[in-house]
Image (tube, rainbow, N blue to C red; front, top):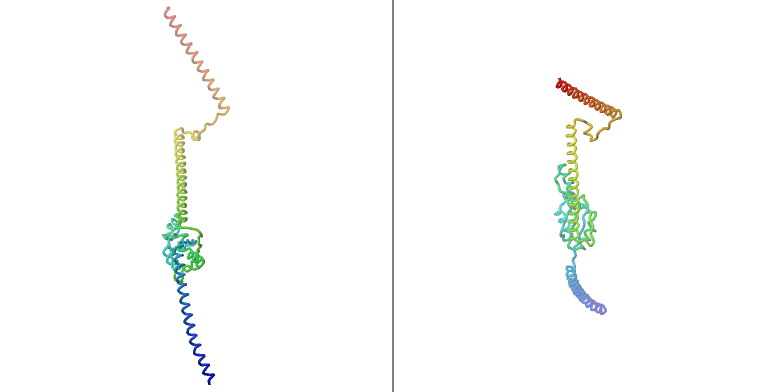
Length: 259
């Protein structure tokens, strides 16, 4: 019995020791948590100072997908800044209008996140995943086509867009100048054809309308020469006859006067 009493006495201080140990452990854990919270606060403060925005490129934009949809879907994962979606070209929109659809669609886009680390995680996790979470959503069967752009800033995008705008304007100017040249050339040819037709109507000969004169053959040349010779002979004979008549008239006058 004495041994049992000793054992009981020894058991009671062991329970108290356990309670003390638990309290010490809780205090130590509280101190660790406070220290970790302080470290997290410091890290967040340091991170807030070093926050760098990141940009994600969207390679596929489904029909009727607007910037508000991008913001609503991606703002769940992080703070979204500026969004730009490249619209379709004008000739494609004109074709669609002629076909009867007046919907404005986009071809590609860029999304800016406040923190580039969040942008990297979003691009890696959402790539090749469905856009719409619910099956009833319009974009459930469309997949995200994302890529994080390393060392890419929003100023680079604005510069690229300005360059593309200038190239488009230069191309339009070149096309307009080429069209003007073609129209001027066509009008000049029309005026020339009118002049040739007027000359042909005045001359009444088809050869002149062609702008050249056919050379005479040898027979025609010989006949023309013979005709010229005959004309000259006839002219000489007429002159001789006139002279003879004038001489006879003079003689008659002279003799009449003498009589």
